Length: 57
Image (cartoon, rainbow, N blue to C red; front, side, top):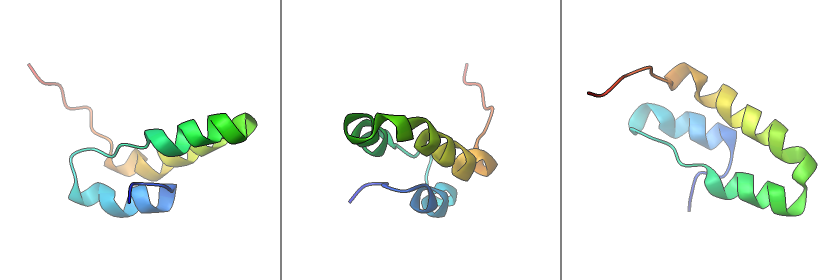
């Protein structure tokens, strides 16, 4: 089972280095493309607290 909702992404974010959310966005684009921007925004908002600006050299 993958990360299928913004709530689940937010729950696992403190425990992982990255959260991959491609499938829910692609599914939205294929079935209800007008909802894809809102879904992407919801994921971004759910993960915003855990975002880093780390730069690797």
